[in-house]
Length: 229
Image 1 (cartoon, rainbow, N blue to C red):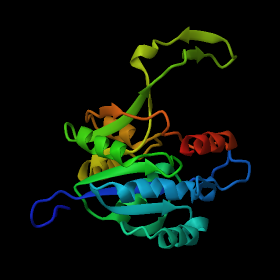
Image 2 (cartoon, one colour):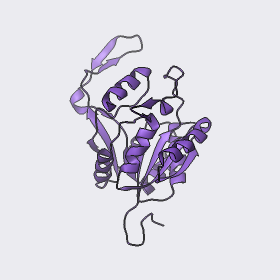
Image 3 (cartoon, helix red, strand yellow):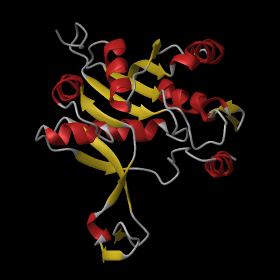
Image 4 (cartoon, one colour):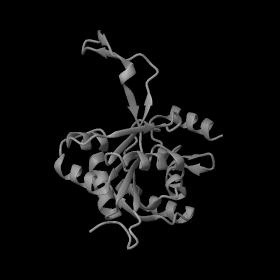
């Protein structure tokens, strides 16, 4: 059964993962910290709400934040959020919960709720990039020199950064492909594109944004606020 409608229009969905513990935030709950007049999570969801291509959204929360997540959706009037569900032990478990909650669509964008500065245009670029192989990931070039360091702290080599990039979200996939990856790849991975790579499927890259930062420390909050201003 396809996620397409009767007129063969493709259905695009999104899973926003916001089920982490935020252990590096010094006791702050980053998701509900207000920056630029809105919570960080509110900024992230709003970008998908405002993206014309996206028709439905599943929001994945930590069990302790489920009610706050539902309140946020109601207060902000997000019409595309069809469910706020509880996540799992690992990030990939939380994504799986979101995929089940979202239901079958043709394409799905998976985004970290801790990246509040995503924009609708970048989401659309990801959807377009994924069409070539069924999977896409946003990347930005590395600007720092990257070193290999041995366990004793001694530099063991310098990497060629011209072939290295930093990956961001949203990562976009054919829904069936990502479901297959979550079924077949059971060991720990760092992101969804790594799961698809392990299936032998090529993952296309598209241009990310340097401002599409992931909030992991209190310093990142100040940076996000400066960007929003």
